[in-house]
Length: 377
Image (cartoon, rainbow, N blue to C red; front, top):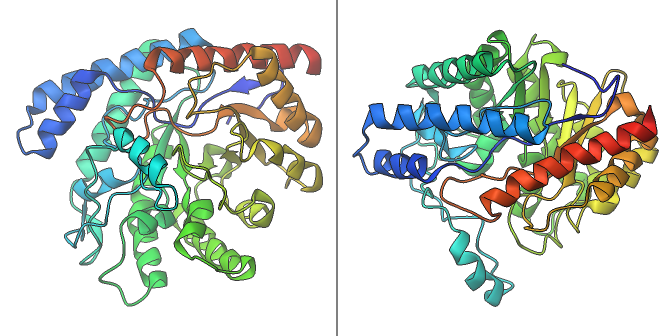
């Protein structure tokens, strides 16, 4: 994994806006009317397109934008056996405490809301889909001359959070099963030469699943999920992995989010070398101060979000630079890679940030990193 040794490197969280023709083909696939050749061609073109746009924006560590997936987690139901249970209620747009906001957020609902429970043993059904993702991304990165690229995959805890257990005797047994199965995908991504990004929003977002839970008890849940994660990545090298922790990409108030300071020590026990997390949105923008009191383990890197992924404001590069400086002065410049709070295309068909503005924001991220680098070197 590259480090910020000569200047602050830039990256993002993973998902990027999908072209309309890709969304149309994914919807057709959902309805059982897929034109496989047309879908593959659309995704291949989209991957090449987002790589070019990331490079043009000045992003150093790029990815395939998750162009061929409906979202960052639930796409696994088409690849794994065991998910035939009753579908969970749609999430991400409901704010029962705020009915007016709930009505506003309906326009951001994803058309891909089928989230069935685990109703049988989890195993691979279509690993070739993973291999196709990897091969397509690798070919596009080679063609574009990319120096370093990452590929995302959901953590065991995140899958368990989204796709409820209705088969295994306990959550622990379910987590262990997922860890064992997903290990194959994790290894394949690393062996293909990518930096593996493990998406772990479960570590922060699961707090909302346990109303009234004490921080002490919640920390036990976080620790168990980290344990399952570490088990799943076994002997994979830490410097070929990073992880993303967040409180969701929704436009809600986030006033019930668990504070970073209450879980950060456990998060840092996870094996991946780098930790990505939101640091730009109004609820968590102040938490850069947490890193003044946290001793970053040797070799660890942080990837704070310095641009918000839910707002159509384009951050001024000087503000981005200021945010980067706060983190760099807290943990050391070589231990910081500048990132985004969350994905810009978390769910296919859901648009919160205008596509053109997404690329403007990423360009502001890169320019802010250049400004910060001038001060730090």
